[in-house]
Image (tube, rainbow, N blue to C red):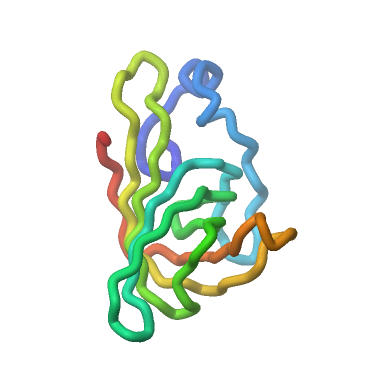
Amino acid sequence: MDELGSQIGPIEKARNPLLRQKQIAPDLRGTVRYSLHAKVVFTWRDGHGRSREAQGYTRNISQRGAYVIAPACPSQGERVTLNFYLPALAGETRELRIDAVGRVLRVEPVGEPEAGIGFAVSNESINLCAA
C-alpha cells in the first residue's frame, strides 16, 4: 500500500512518472516524504480575518504534510486549506486532487528572491478526490 492507502503495483509505478518520483528517506519527522512538483491552490485567513488565496507548487509531500513554494504564504501558525492537483494515472482521464487542511509550521525564503517563499504545513485532515 502507498501512503494514501491505495494498492499500487510495480507495473503502475513504472508507467507513471508521478509514482516514480524519488523517495526521500525518513528523517526525524518519522514519515517518508516524496519529492513531488505538483500544483497547489491554498486559502487562509490573514491576521485581519480577510480570506486570502494563492497558488504555488509542492517541493515534497507526505501523509502528514507538505512543503509548498509560492509567491505569497500564510503566516506561521495559520490554518490553511490546500488543494493539490496530481496528473491522471496511466489509463485514466481525470486528474486526482488531494484536499487537505493543516497548520503552517514555518515560513522561509527559498534561494533567490524571485523563487518565492516556502512554507511547511502539517496536515490535520486529507482527502483524495477525482478532480
